[in-house]
Every structure is written in C-alpha cells, then in structure tokens.
Amino acid sequence: MELAGELARLVGEDAVLTAGMGAYATDSTEGRGLRGWPDAVVMPADAGAVAQVVAWCYHHGVPMVPRGGGTGFAGGAVPVDGGVVISLERLRRVRAFDPLLWRANVEAGLTTAEVQRLARESGLDFPPNPGAAEQSQIGGNIATNAGGPRSFKYGATGEWVTGLEAVVAPGELISVGGPARRDVAGYDLKRLLVGSEGTLGIVTAAWLRLLPAPAARLPVVALHADADSGCAALERVLGSGIRAASLEFLDEATIALAGGAFPADAAVSGFMTLAEADGSPEEVLRLRAELEEALGEGATRVLAPTDPNEVARIVTWRDGVSLIVSAQHGGKLSEDVAVPLDRLAEALAEVKSIAALHGLETCAWGHAGDGIIHASFLVDRTDERQLDRAAEAAADLFALALRLGGTVTGEHGIGIAKAGQLQAQWPARAVELHEQVKRVFDPKNLFNPGKKLARPSL
Image (cartoon, rainbow, N blue to C red; front, side):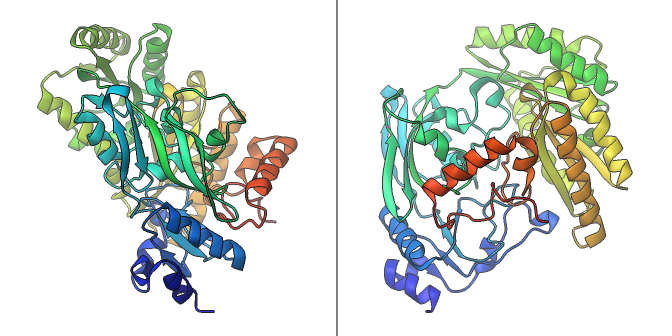
C-alpha cells in the first residue's frame, strides 16, 4: 500500500504533499533538536475531507498527527514516530459572523491574527493573545488551550469557545456546544477536547465568543533592583485588587540580553515588571495610575507612555524577547512551568541554581498574574551535550514547580517534550482516569499517539 497515493485517491492529489514534507517535521521545539518525519502530509480542504482521512487511517491502523500553525513549544505537532500529518491550514472559512451578537463561527485553519482583525473591524475583540498571531491557528490554540499575557484578566482560549466541530474515531464529524453562550445539557465534551492536544480528536471549527473592544490600552513598566523587589510589586498589584489586563515579569538576565532593544531614552537594567491597563479612556487612566503606584513603590524607574507609537514599540519589543534570547547561542530549551505568585521569587532563585548546577546560562520571563515562568536554558542546538544537560535541567525545573505547589505546564501543554510528566504531577488514579477517557475517544490510540499521556520510558 502506497500511503500518499491512497490518500490522494481519497481527497485529491492537490491535498497530499509528495515533496517539502520537512516543513511539517517539527514545530517551535526545533531549536532544542526535537524533530520527526511524517510518512505522509495531507491538507484536507474541508471538514468532510478531514473525516474521510481519519476514517481511512482508523480503518488501516495508521497514526495521525493533527497540525495547526506549527508554533507549539511542546512538540505536540511533531510526528516523532511517523504517521500521517493532517494539516488544517486549508480550513479557512468564516462560517458565520454576528457582530451584534458578539460571536463568530470559524474554521480551524484561520490564524489568531485573522480572527482578531475580523473582530476589530466591527469594534469587537477576541481577547486570547497567545503569541505568533500571524502563524498560530485557532484549531491549534484550542487544542492546547493557549493562553498569553491577557489570560490574567480574560482567561485562556477555552474560555472563549462556546461550541466545537471535531472529527472523532472512527472518522465521524460531531458538534458539541454551539452559538448558545451557556449549555449544561450533557457532559462537557467541548471542555475535554479543549486542551487535549489532538489526542482525542481533531477540531475543525469553533464558535467563538467576542467582546466589545476596549477603547484604550496603556502599558506600565517598572524596573527593580532585584527579583525580590519586583515580585513584591507584583503581589501588591493583586493585593490592591487592580484589574490589569496583563501582569508580566522579565528577570535581570533577560533584560541583560534583550534590554538593549527596549524602546526607551536610556538604558534599562534590573528586574522588569510590565502591566497593561485596558478599558474606557477614563478607566484606563485610573488603572494606569494605580499600576504606577503599586509597581513603582521601591522601583528604580517607572515608564508609563501614552503616545501610541511608544506604546506600540513596547508591545513589539515584548513580543520579540523570545527571538532575541534564542539568537544568543542559536537555540534555547524553554519550559512553561507555573507556581503560586507568592512562590515566584523563590522559584526564580532556584532556576538560577538549577542552571548553574548543569553548567548552563539561563533567563526567565513570564505571565506573573498566572504564575507562569518561561524558564529558558540557552543552548547551541548543534551541541548534543548541551541539549542533554538542558533536558536534565528541565527535569529539575519540573520537580521544583511541583514542590512549590505548581504545575509542569501553565501554557504549552505536555506534548512529547514533557512525556511522563503527567504521572509526576497527578496521583495514579487521576492518571488512570485520563487514560480511560483517551480509550473511550480513541480505542486504537491513533490520534497523536505518544503525546500528553505517554508514560515515562524505563
């Protein structure tokens, strides 16, 4: 059986790649050396074609790896054991858009930026902003329950999904939820699919909830002498009840690497806290003043620009920090653990100790409002020894997060990069329940096998 030929006969030759499959062999974990190889890549034109491919694969026992924009950091879309990569990039229709009802029904291949622009053109907002907006796709965001800086106020992607269309075993197209904003008729299958990383089925379309766009957004940036001072400022924001849209931090090492590109009239140094206020013009000015006071206490410098160009430059800089850091040695292993905010300073100190123990450079930034730490270990991705040491450091990082009452992943998911970590975090019976859910949805274990639920290798 010639796999590509069989798939081409099923959905058309234009939907099956016969060359250039290397672009579908990895995701944003490539910088740490994680790469697979697909046996075939198929790009169905619609949800019906996705169902046809799944039905064929399920009948013939062929593993499937769903793929969105390939921007994941856990290797969830990497075909490490081959199989058919099912790319959703051609599912790009806006099936319905009802701006007066604050909702849209879009297919999985639409990018985050396209959904945001669709909403913005009618004075609305799709709040989730997980990054790589021009590449990341809604289906992938749903599959990973992607978050981002504004999840502090608005929640992750799943909070904005009221209905899903998905293909489940053995190749059936189902809908759960819909345009209604609330539905408690049955078990919340929609919530099971959200964040399942393609291991239970393949999301093909979603009903999304929208909001009227805030009239204004303004950042407040404060620089602190050290992490203790900065983390105390972050806790003051929460303790004061300030409803910031985002609440972030960048440690001293990150600022040393990326601060030279920060758009300011003087050099920046130290530990940075960065918050965003949004709302009506009056509300934004009030929140901005409250953030200046809370973050500014004990700070060495506070910046609160109102000029739109200055604001845009800060946003652009923040979005590019990860790329700047990656360029230092050619790669990084970056993990997204989360801890309670009151343990953040302790966690950051221990991240430095872990890096030193393994002979690595490190830096960290993250979404402080949710306690998420993007701890990065800088590596030369051509150096196998560095990659091995970084993997050992990551294992220590996961153990640290759990010891402090946190989680091994606050954003990116388990994928393949954190294989076995679910068993470290959850008690045995809870893991068994996860596995039983998987078997109900996918009795042949063909949907993204080896991801999320994989047990530690012996």
